[in-house]
Amino acid sequence: MPNSPLFATDEPLFHEQEQDLSMLHAAGFDTSFGGGSKLQGFVECKLELQQLPTTTPVHRQRKRKTAELHRLREGDRLAAESVRIGKKMKQEQPDDVKMEAEKIFRRRYDILHGILEAWNTGGIEDLEEIADNVYDDDVTLISPDYSEGLRGVEAVMSHWNLLLDAFPDGIMEEYVIQREEGSSEKMKATWIFSGTQIYPIFGVQPRHKKVCISGKSSFTFKGDRIRQMVLSWNYRETLLKLMGLQPDKTNDTVLIIALEGSWL
Image 1 (cartoon, one colour):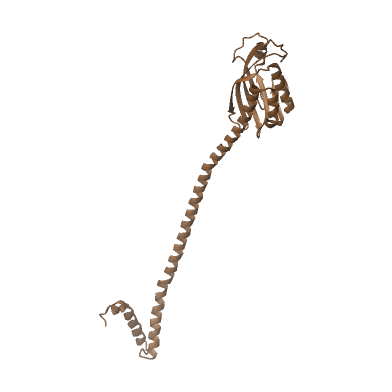
Image 2: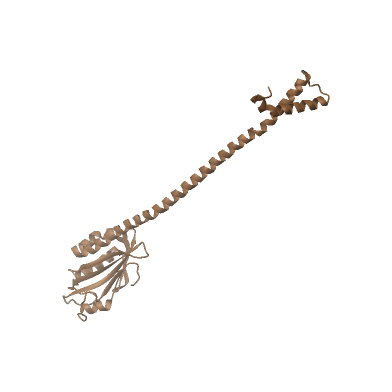
């Protein structure tokens, strides 16, 4: 049925078969039923085999491209996730560092606060009670009246004992404890010390008069213990005050306690 839809669909194939059979017939081959059927089957087989390369490789290639696309997308996703995690860690790290630095500062602040308060609330016994917990075993102290400095907890405590003997009512009227800029191991304090001299000190006999000394202190830590201290003040003005040769004003004399062995 030449006009049927089926015939219309396969019309090119039938024409090609007729052309092949005509060529075989012209060449002297028998295209009738029997021998010719084999040739016709061969032609049909040839035509069918020619159709295979047009479908299967394209289908495989599409699968390979799809799989490759999935791998690329997965790689992009993993890379983006890695970048996101890296940024998050960078954001969290500074916060962790700041938090740890703040904890260290609070512990050291409490140590210095305890020492200064021991001056205000008690005597040498109070300082001795906390000494082993706040000073490194090899702690050093330098001051104008000890040019060679002092080393060891016992020597430092002897120095405090001498000051308390000379000024038994000595107190820190004011003090401010702060971080030392540019160093994670140093702290500083500014303070005003006042007391009545009743015992010889610095070679000056007592006048039983109250004096005030303004000062600064710098402390160097080793962990949670003080490793070095340097006491430094205007030595000449202090002596003049103790001898009564200079009016005593709160901020006349500067006394600096610095830890690290450097004079300020």
